[in-house]
Amino acid sequence: MAFSSSNLDLTISVPSSARDLDMNRLPSPGSDDEWIASTMEVVVDEENTTNDGVVPRKKLRLSKEQSRLLEESFRQNHTLNPRQKEALASQLKLRPRQVEVWFQNRRARSKLKQTEMEFQYLKRWFEFLTKQNQELQSEVEELRALQVGPPTVISPHSREPLPASTLTTCPRCERVTTISSRGASLINTTTSTNNTSTTSALQSRPSSAAG
DNA sequence: CGAGTCAATTAGGATC
DNA sequence: GATCCTAATTGACTCG
Image (cartoon, rainbow, N blue to C red; front, side, top):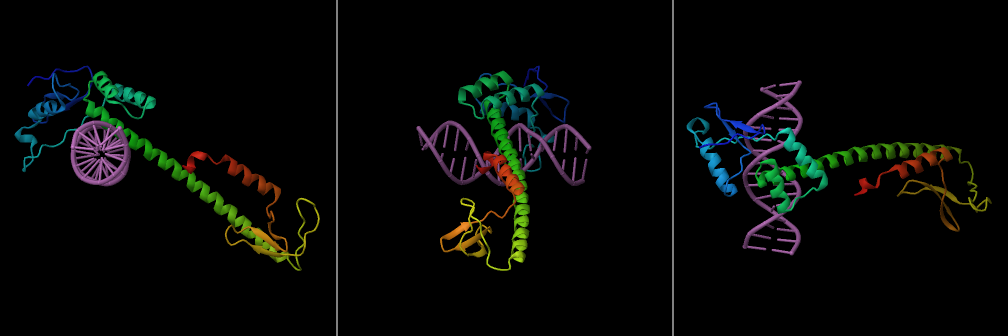
């Protein structure tokens, strides 16, 4: 069995003898099955088999140049059509299946990274909302403490006092509302500075996190 | 039904 | 030796 050495530093060593097997070798000519069969022929020897005759898996390590090229083409496209796959495999002296597997794993890593980033973002967003909620709760408490008689609510539109109403907390959003004869109207209980921070926080929220 | 993709998993090798 | 990274396998699923 003769394996030509390649200029890429991708080899597997067979422990029993010091010989190296070039993992990048393309089948010439033939299918992946033939390539695997020829590889197995080298790998299978008595010292490399377990008691039940199972051949231990040898792991390919991609060279830096191979990884660089794969990353480069991944940046261009996250999936490859069969022709691109063949071309890339041939360029990298890998089997198409290996290129395919690399892209598959790369997509998985990419997705995992994205999920981790989204998790971090949502975590920070949750912390922010919790803090905001606590602050609003405190304000509600303060307002309740100040409430001695029926509240006088100034209309933000007319600047005129609105009819007597009842100060309550919306059970859904926990914002303070007034229930008046004209129906429920929202009172902004936050200060202008708080309002600004809330608005800017909302505006800075990246839409990508939503989906 | 075959090809392609994905999620889950396994396992080899590097690094600490 | 534990841990991390990643190549490779497997089985389920989708789509034309």
